[in-house]
Length: 392
Ligand SMILES: *Cc1c(COP(=O)(O)O)cnc(C)c1O
Image (cartoon, protein in one colour):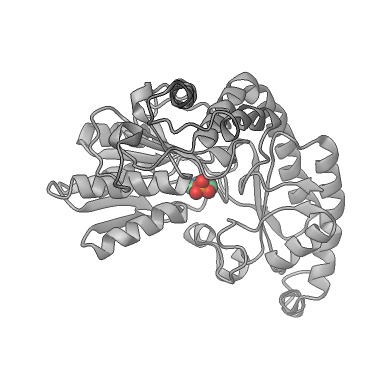
Protein backbone atom coordinates (compact mmCIF):
# COMPACT_ATOMS: atom_id res chain seq x y z
CA UNK A 1 0.00 0.00 0.00
CA UNK A 2 1.16 3.53 -0.77
CA UNK A 3 -0.36 6.15 1.51
CA UNK A 4 -0.73 9.59 -0.03
CA UNK A 5 -3.51 10.95 2.18
CA UNK A 6 -1.57 12.46 5.07
CA UNK A 7 -3.76 15.57 5.07
CA UNK A 8 -6.72 13.35 6.02
CA UNK A 9 -4.84 11.58 8.79
CA UNK A 10 -1.43 10.12 9.55
CA UNK A 11 -0.20 6.81 10.88
CA UNK A 12 0.42 6.97 14.61
CA UNK A 13 4.17 6.92 15.10
CA UNK A 14 5.35 3.81 17.00
CA UNK A 15 7.18 6.05 19.48
CA UNK A 16 3.93 7.92 20.13
CA UNK A 17 2.14 4.66 20.75
CA UNK A 18 4.97 3.63 23.06
CA UNK A 19 4.56 6.81 25.09
CA UNK A 20 0.80 6.30 25.32
CA UNK A 21 0.69 2.65 26.33
CA UNK A 22 1.57 3.03 30.03
CA UNK A 23 -1.37 5.41 30.44
CA UNK A 24 -3.74 2.86 28.94
CA UNK A 25 -2.45 0.21 31.31
CA UNK A 26 -0.81 0.73 34.70
CA UNK A 27 -1.03 4.53 34.91
CA UNK A 28 -4.81 4.57 34.67
CA UNK A 29 -5.51 6.96 37.54
CA UNK A 30 -7.96 9.81 37.22
CA UNK A 31 -5.81 12.95 37.10
CA UNK A 32 -8.22 14.73 39.44
CA UNK A 33 -7.75 12.26 42.27
CA UNK A 34 -5.33 12.80 45.17
CA UNK A 35 -3.13 9.67 45.39
CA UNK A 36 0.23 9.11 43.69
CA UNK A 37 -1.26 7.03 40.89
CA UNK A 38 -3.36 10.03 39.92
CA UNK A 39 -0.52 12.47 40.23
CA UNK A 40 1.50 10.44 37.72
CA UNK A 41 -1.32 10.81 35.19
CA UNK A 42 -1.46 14.51 36.05
CA UNK A 43 2.29 14.77 35.45
CA UNK A 44 1.88 13.09 32.06
CA UNK A 45 -0.65 15.73 31.01
CA UNK A 46 1.44 18.54 32.40
CA UNK A 47 4.52 17.37 30.48
CA UNK A 48 2.52 17.16 27.26
CA UNK A 49 1.17 20.66 27.83
CA UNK A 50 4.71 21.94 28.20
CA UNK A 51 5.77 20.15 24.98
CA UNK A 52 2.90 21.59 22.96
CA UNK A 53 3.18 25.08 24.45
CA UNK A 54 6.90 25.50 23.89
CA UNK A 55 6.63 24.19 20.32
CA UNK A 56 4.46 27.16 19.30
CA UNK A 57 6.01 29.75 21.60
CA UNK A 58 3.16 29.75 24.11
CA UNK A 59 3.16 29.29 27.86
CA UNK A 60 1.65 26.22 29.51
CA UNK A 61 -1.39 28.02 30.87
CA UNK A 62 -2.37 28.93 27.31
CA UNK A 63 -2.86 25.36 26.00
CA UNK A 64 -6.21 23.59 26.41
CA UNK A 65 -6.45 19.97 25.32
CA UNK A 66 -9.66 19.12 23.46
CA UNK A 67 -11.22 16.14 21.72
CA UNK A 68 -10.23 17.11 18.16
CA UNK A 69 -9.19 19.87 15.82
CA UNK A 70 -12.88 20.33 15.11
CA UNK A 71 -13.62 20.91 18.78
CA UNK A 72 -10.76 23.39 19.04
CA UNK A 73 -12.21 25.38 16.13
CA UNK A 74 -15.73 25.24 17.58
CA UNK A 75 -14.51 26.28 21.00
CA UNK A 76 -12.48 29.19 19.66
CA UNK A 77 -15.32 30.54 17.55
CA UNK A 78 -18.36 29.91 19.74
CA UNK A 79 -16.36 30.58 22.90
CA UNK A 80 -15.39 34.08 21.76
CA UNK A 81 -18.77 34.81 20.16
CA UNK A 82 -20.66 33.92 23.32
CA UNK A 83 -18.22 35.67 25.65
CA UNK A 84 -18.25 38.91 23.65
CA UNK A 85 -21.92 39.00 22.60
CA UNK A 86 -22.38 42.27 24.51
CA UNK A 87 -19.61 43.90 22.54
CA UNK A 88 -20.83 42.92 19.07
CA UNK A 89 -22.08 40.08 16.92
CA UNK A 90 -20.05 40.32 13.73
CA UNK A 91 -17.58 37.62 12.72
CA UNK A 92 -15.23 37.52 9.73
CA UNK A 93 -14.03 34.29 8.16
CA UNK A 94 -13.25 32.98 4.66
CA UNK A 95 -15.12 30.83 2.18
CA UNK A 96 -12.39 28.16 2.14
CA UNK A 97 -12.31 27.22 5.81
CA UNK A 98 -12.67 23.68 7.09
CA UNK A 99 -16.29 22.75 7.83
CA UNK A 100 -15.53 22.86 11.56
CA UNK A 101 -15.11 26.62 11.16
CA UNK A 102 -17.75 27.23 8.51
CA UNK A 103 -20.43 25.28 10.33
CA UNK A 104 -19.57 26.77 13.72
CA UNK A 105 -20.09 30.19 12.12
CA UNK A 106 -23.28 28.94 10.48
CA UNK A 107 -24.60 27.85 13.87
CA UNK A 108 -23.88 31.29 15.29
CA UNK A 109 -25.74 32.91 12.40
CA UNK A 110 -28.84 31.07 13.57
CA UNK A 111 -28.26 32.63 16.99
CA UNK A 112 -28.33 36.13 15.53
CA UNK A 113 -24.66 36.67 14.75
CA UNK A 114 -23.65 38.13 11.42
CA UNK A 115 -20.92 36.37 9.45
CA UNK A 116 -18.87 37.81 6.59
CA UNK A 117 -17.17 35.01 4.62
CA UNK A 118 -14.42 36.57 2.49
CA UNK A 119 -13.71 35.17 -0.95
CA UNK A 120 -10.13 34.20 -1.70
CA UNK A 121 -8.43 34.89 -5.02
CA UNK A 122 -7.99 32.17 -7.64
CA UNK A 123 -5.01 30.74 -5.69
CA UNK A 124 -7.00 30.54 -2.48
CA UNK A 125 -5.29 33.51 -0.84
CA UNK A 126 -7.35 35.77 1.43
CA UNK A 127 -5.74 39.19 1.16
CA UNK A 128 -5.06 40.97 4.45
CA UNK A 129 -6.55 44.17 2.97
CA UNK A 130 -9.88 42.38 2.46
CA UNK A 131 -9.91 41.56 6.17
CA UNK A 132 -9.05 45.16 7.08
CA UNK A 133 -11.90 46.43 4.91
CA UNK A 134 -14.39 44.00 6.43
CA UNK A 135 -13.72 44.89 10.09
CA UNK A 136 -16.52 46.98 11.63
CA UNK A 137 -17.15 48.48 15.04
CA UNK A 138 -19.16 45.43 16.05
CA UNK A 139 -16.62 42.85 14.76
CA UNK A 140 -15.58 40.60 17.63
CA UNK A 141 -13.69 37.81 15.88
CA UNK A 142 -11.72 37.02 12.74
CA UNK A 143 -11.11 33.36 11.91
CA UNK A 144 -8.84 32.58 8.94
CA UNK A 145 -7.08 29.26 8.49
CA UNK A 146 -3.29 29.12 8.47
CA UNK A 147 -3.21 26.74 5.52
CA UNK A 148 -5.86 25.02 3.49
CA UNK A 149 -6.33 21.27 3.76
CA UNK A 150 -7.43 20.77 0.14
CA UNK A 151 -5.22 23.04 -1.94
CA UNK A 152 -2.40 23.71 0.53
CA UNK A 153 -2.46 27.50 0.17
CA UNK A 154 -1.01 29.37 3.14
CA UNK A 155 -2.52 32.66 4.27
CA UNK A 156 -0.77 35.89 5.29
CA UNK A 157 -1.61 35.16 8.92
CA UNK A 158 0.98 37.42 10.58
CA UNK A 159 -0.24 40.33 8.47
CA UNK A 160 -3.92 39.63 9.19
CA UNK A 161 -3.06 39.19 12.86
CA UNK A 162 -1.33 42.56 12.99
CA UNK A 163 -4.44 44.21 11.56
CA UNK A 164 -6.70 42.48 14.09
CA UNK A 165 -4.40 43.44 16.94
CA UNK A 166 -4.38 47.06 15.85
CA UNK A 167 -8.18 47.11 15.55
CA UNK A 168 -8.74 45.27 18.83
CA UNK A 169 -10.39 42.21 17.27
CA UNK A 170 -9.73 38.66 18.50
CA UNK A 171 -8.01 36.51 15.85
CA UNK A 172 -8.31 32.73 15.56
CA UNK A 173 -6.41 30.57 13.10
CA UNK A 174 -7.03 26.92 12.24
CA UNK A 175 -3.45 25.67 11.98
CA UNK A 176 -4.32 21.97 11.92
CA UNK A 177 -2.60 21.37 8.57
CA UNK A 178 0.36 23.65 9.23
CA UNK A 179 1.70 22.12 12.42
CA UNK A 180 4.95 20.35 11.64
CA UNK A 181 5.00 21.60 8.04
CA UNK A 182 6.08 25.18 8.64
CA UNK A 183 7.38 26.92 11.80
CA UNK A 184 4.60 28.35 13.97
CA UNK A 185 5.02 30.94 16.68
CA UNK A 186 1.92 32.48 18.18
CA UNK A 187 3.57 35.84 18.87
CA UNK A 188 5.08 36.17 15.40
CA UNK A 189 1.70 35.21 13.93
CA UNK A 190 -0.17 37.75 16.11
CA UNK A 191 -2.88 35.19 16.88
CA UNK A 192 -5.06 34.98 19.98
CA UNK A 193 -6.31 31.46 19.31
CA UNK A 194 -4.81 28.59 17.30
CA UNK A 195 -6.27 25.13 16.67
CA UNK A 196 -4.20 21.93 16.37
CA UNK A 197 -5.01 18.23 16.00
CA UNK A 198 -2.87 15.25 17.02
CA UNK A 199 -3.84 12.81 14.28
CA UNK A 200 -2.51 15.06 11.52
CA UNK A 201 0.97 14.95 13.08
CA UNK A 202 1.45 11.20 13.63
CA UNK A 203 -0.41 11.30 16.93
CA UNK A 204 -3.64 9.55 17.96
CA UNK A 205 -7.12 10.43 16.76
CA UNK A 206 -9.53 12.11 19.15
CA UNK A 207 -7.15 14.68 20.65
CA UNK A 208 -6.66 18.31 19.78
CA UNK A 209 -5.35 21.43 21.40
CA UNK A 210 -6.39 25.04 21.42
CA UNK A 211 -3.94 27.81 22.14
CA UNK A 212 -5.69 30.64 23.98
CA UNK A 213 -3.67 33.82 24.52
CA UNK A 214 -3.59 34.86 28.17
CA UNK A 215 -6.51 37.17 28.93
CA UNK A 216 -8.72 36.01 26.03
CA UNK A 217 -12.29 35.56 27.24
CA UNK A 218 -13.97 32.31 26.21
CA UNK A 219 -17.30 30.85 27.26
CA UNK A 220 -16.74 27.16 27.64
CA UNK A 221 -18.38 24.58 25.37
CA UNK A 222 -18.46 21.70 27.82
CA UNK A 223 -19.71 22.30 31.35
CA UNK A 224 -19.02 20.07 34.30
CA UNK A 225 -15.83 19.50 36.25
CA UNK A 226 -12.88 21.82 36.60
CA UNK A 227 -10.49 20.09 34.22
CA UNK A 228 -8.22 21.97 31.83
CA UNK A 229 -8.00 25.04 34.06
CA UNK A 230 -11.82 25.09 34.23
CA UNK A 231 -12.02 25.61 30.49
CA UNK A 232 -13.09 22.14 29.35
CA UNK A 233 -14.94 19.73 31.60
CA UNK A 234 -14.55 15.98 31.33
CA UNK A 235 -11.98 13.49 32.59
CA UNK A 236 -8.93 13.93 30.42
CA UNK A 237 -7.92 11.60 27.60
CA UNK A 238 -4.61 11.06 29.38
CA UNK A 239 -3.05 8.62 26.91
CA UNK A 240 -4.17 10.70 23.96
CA UNK A 241 -2.80 13.90 25.45
CA UNK A 242 0.51 12.22 26.28
CA UNK A 243 0.58 10.94 22.68
CA UNK A 244 0.02 14.43 21.32
CA UNK A 245 2.89 15.72 23.44
CA UNK A 246 5.14 12.97 22.12
CA UNK A 247 4.06 13.65 18.54
CA UNK A 248 5.06 17.29 18.95
CA UNK A 249 8.38 16.28 20.53
CA UNK A 250 9.11 14.14 17.45
CA UNK A 251 8.29 17.08 15.20
CA UNK A 252 10.80 19.15 17.11
CA UNK A 253 13.45 16.44 16.77
CA UNK A 254 13.00 15.39 13.18
CA UNK A 255 10.29 17.55 11.64
CA UNK A 256 12.54 19.91 9.74
CA UNK A 257 14.63 17.17 8.20
CA UNK A 258 11.54 15.16 7.29
CA UNK A 259 9.96 18.18 5.72
CA UNK A 260 12.94 18.92 3.47
CA UNK A 261 12.70 15.43 2.05
CA UNK A 262 8.89 15.53 1.81
CA UNK A 263 9.02 18.92 0.07
CA UNK A 264 11.40 17.51 -2.54
CA UNK A 265 9.13 14.53 -3.20
CA UNK A 266 6.04 16.75 -3.32
CA UNK A 267 7.77 18.96 -5.87
CA UNK A 268 8.36 15.89 -8.02
CA UNK A 269 4.69 14.94 -7.79
CA UNK A 270 3.62 18.42 -8.84
CA UNK A 271 6.02 18.64 -11.75
CA UNK A 272 5.47 15.07 -12.83
CA UNK A 273 1.67 15.16 -12.83
CA UNK A 274 1.43 18.51 -14.59
CA UNK A 275 3.92 17.32 -17.21
CA UNK A 276 2.54 13.82 -17.79
CA UNK A 277 -1.22 14.37 -17.53
CA UNK A 278 -2.71 16.53 -20.30
CA UNK A 279 -5.43 19.08 -19.39
CA UNK A 280 -4.43 19.15 -15.76
CA UNK A 281 -3.36 22.01 -13.53
CA UNK A 282 -2.11 22.62 -10.03
CA UNK A 283 -4.68 24.10 -7.63
CA UNK A 284 -3.76 26.51 -4.87
CA UNK A 285 -0.90 28.98 -4.83
CA UNK A 286 2.23 27.93 -6.78
CA UNK A 287 4.62 29.07 -4.00
CA UNK A 288 2.68 30.05 -0.88
CA UNK A 289 1.67 26.46 -0.21
CA UNK A 290 2.30 23.68 2.27
CA UNK A 291 5.40 21.66 1.37
CA UNK A 292 3.51 18.34 1.48
CA UNK A 293 0.33 18.88 -0.54
CA UNK A 294 0.11 18.42 -4.31
CA UNK A 295 -3.39 19.25 -5.52
CA UNK A 296 -4.76 19.26 -9.02
CA UNK A 297 -7.83 19.46 -11.15
CA UNK A 298 -7.80 17.03 -14.03
CA UNK A 299 -10.28 17.92 -16.74
CA UNK A 300 -12.82 15.52 -18.27
CA UNK A 301 -12.77 12.88 -15.54
CA UNK A 302 -14.49 12.32 -12.22
CA UNK A 303 -12.16 12.50 -9.23
CA UNK A 304 -14.04 9.64 -7.61
CA UNK A 305 -13.30 7.31 -10.52
CA UNK A 306 -9.64 8.15 -10.31
CA UNK A 307 -9.54 7.45 -6.58
CA UNK A 308 -11.07 4.04 -7.21
CA UNK A 309 -8.50 3.24 -9.90
CA UNK A 310 -5.68 4.32 -7.61
CA UNK A 311 -7.13 2.32 -4.74
CA UNK A 312 -7.29 -0.86 -6.82
CA UNK A 313 -3.62 -0.27 -7.51
CA UNK A 314 -2.89 0.12 -3.78
CA UNK A 315 -2.56 3.90 -3.71
CA UNK A 316 -4.56 5.96 -1.18
CA UNK A 317 -5.21 9.52 -2.28
CA UNK A 318 -8.08 11.92 -1.98
CA UNK A 319 -10.30 14.18 -3.97
CA UNK A 320 -10.39 17.28 -1.80
CA UNK A 321 -11.37 16.79 1.81
CA UNK A 322 -12.26 13.54 3.54
CA UNK A 323 -15.55 15.13 4.54
CA UNK A 324 -16.75 15.83 1.02
CA UNK A 325 -15.46 12.64 -0.61
CA UNK A 326 -18.31 10.22 -0.72
CA UNK A 327 -20.79 12.99 -1.40
CA UNK A 328 -21.47 14.33 -4.86
CA UNK A 329 -20.96 17.97 -3.90
CA UNK A 330 -17.83 19.43 -5.40
CA UNK A 331 -15.36 21.02 -2.99
CA UNK A 332 -16.47 24.39 -1.58
CA UNK A 333 -12.79 25.36 -1.61
CA UNK A 334 -12.34 24.84 -5.34
CA UNK A 335 -15.64 26.59 -6.07
CA UNK A 336 -14.56 29.56 -3.93
CA UNK A 337 -11.35 29.85 -5.99
CA UNK A 338 -13.45 30.16 -9.12
CA UNK A 339 -13.48 26.58 -10.45
CA UNK A 340 -16.64 25.53 -12.24
CA UNK A 341 -18.58 22.56 -10.85
CA UNK A 342 -17.43 20.43 -13.76
CA UNK A 343 -13.75 21.20 -13.27
CA UNK A 344 -13.99 20.84 -9.48
CA UNK A 345 -15.28 17.29 -9.91
CA UNK A 346 -11.90 16.28 -11.34
CA UNK A 347 -9.90 17.15 -8.24
CA UNK A 348 -7.05 15.06 -6.90
CA UNK A 349 -5.08 15.65 -3.71
CA UNK A 350 -1.82 13.85 -3.02
CA UNK A 351 -0.61 14.64 0.50
CA UNK A 352 2.75 13.28 1.55
CA UNK A 353 4.10 12.35 4.95
CA UNK A 354 7.00 10.96 6.90
CA UNK A 355 6.72 7.43 5.55
CA UNK A 356 6.65 8.25 1.83
CA UNK A 357 9.63 7.28 -0.31
CA UNK A 358 11.01 8.07 -3.74
CA UNK A 359 9.65 4.72 -4.91
CA UNK A 360 6.11 5.77 -3.89
CA UNK A 361 6.38 8.87 -6.04
CA UNK A 362 7.84 6.95 -8.99
CA UNK A 363 5.02 4.41 -8.85
CA UNK A 364 2.35 7.13 -8.73
CA UNK A 365 3.84 9.03 -11.64
CA UNK A 366 4.17 5.86 -13.69
CA UNK A 367 0.57 4.80 -13.05
CA UNK A 368 -1.49 7.97 -13.05
CA UNK A 369 -1.32 9.04 -16.72
CA UNK A 370 -2.60 5.63 -17.85
CA UNK A 371 -5.49 5.74 -15.36
CA UNK A 372 -6.50 9.19 -16.56
CA UNK A 373 -6.39 8.08 -20.18
CA UNK A 374 -8.57 5.03 -19.48
CA UNK A 375 -11.11 7.03 -17.49
CA UNK A 376 -11.30 9.62 -20.23
CA UNK A 377 -11.89 6.94 -22.82
CA UNK A 378 -15.10 6.11 -20.91
CA UNK A 379 -16.08 9.69 -20.10
CA UNK A 380 -18.95 11.49 -21.84
CA UNK A 381 -17.22 14.77 -20.88
CA UNK A 382 -14.15 13.78 -22.87
CA UNK A 383 -16.27 12.62 -25.79
CA UNK A 384 -18.11 15.93 -25.78
CA UNK A 385 -14.87 17.97 -25.57
CA UNK A 386 -13.50 16.01 -28.53
CA UNK A 387 -16.59 16.74 -30.60
CA UNK A 388 -16.24 20.42 -29.80
CA UNK A 389 -12.59 20.33 -30.82
CA UNK A 390 -11.45 21.38 -27.32
CA UNK A 391 -9.09 18.44 -26.95
CA UNK A 392 -7.22 16.09 -29.22
C1 LIG B 1 -8.46 17.74 9.88
C2 LIG B 1 -8.75 19.19 10.00
C3 LIG B 1 -9.59 19.69 11.00
C4 LIG B 1 -10.32 18.79 11.95
O1 LIG B 1 -9.49 18.11 12.83
P1 LIG B 1 -10.08 16.79 13.52
O2 LIG B 1 -9.11 16.49 14.62
O3 LIG B 1 -10.12 15.74 12.47
O4 LIG B 1 -11.44 17.13 14.03
C5 LIG B 1 -9.80 21.04 11.06
N1 LIG B 1 -9.20 21.88 10.21
C6 LIG B 1 -8.38 21.45 9.24
C7 LIG B 1 -7.74 22.42 8.33
C8 LIG B 1 -8.14 20.09 9.10
O5 LIG B 1 -7.35 19.67 8.11
